[in-house]
Image 1 (cartoon, rainbow over the protein chains, first blue to last red):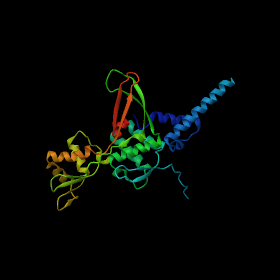
Image 2: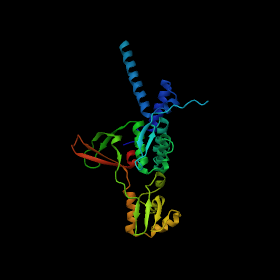
Image 3: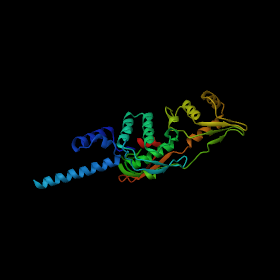
Length: 59
Length: 231
């Protein structure tokens, strides 16, 4: 059982991906509440899946 | 002119030992990072320091985390975790013994976890005339203390004595050496009364029960103290 839902390595990888590919800044990410960041990641994932679906249909 | 700072949402809770209502805000990603770094080191004192730092940042001004009892710190941190990460924790529980290796998904809600109700008497009458007033151990009192070491137990008791009294006086001005010497004079029965206070102090406790879908056996696990919530 864990009081945190993440580990340090995941956190850095996620921060890097959000900064590199989705224009978030480290300050914005640091100032989020952890569950907020999870919500944005889930929304982003849904959006990317939708876009992928649209691209597939357009092919 | 400095711009106004943006504030996070605030919540209310009570300090278990005093019942005082306080405000707190969820911790932020940058504060969770402090905890993750401490957890990476796997050092209990570093984890405690991280928890104290985060609580100090998130509790309303005027609450001195170092002066709170350990169960207050544990409870408040759990509340903080609930509002920052989520109230529901998903677990995969396995049997401690037996042949079945199946891991069962179990959900627990942080709001169901509470501090035990028992409150031992903090004034302990050692003889007809002499008594001692203790306080619950705080996080600072437990730093570097090995619960298995009798020498460390003496240190812990010494840290937590508020005063000693007899029929005429209250003695609160004493050195650590004096108090250590005084404790050594106690009979085993008197000393047990003192140690019982710490053993029976309130603690964060939760029992997880689940039924294994593979073997049908009902199993349970007791989580006690913040340490068990981190492992």
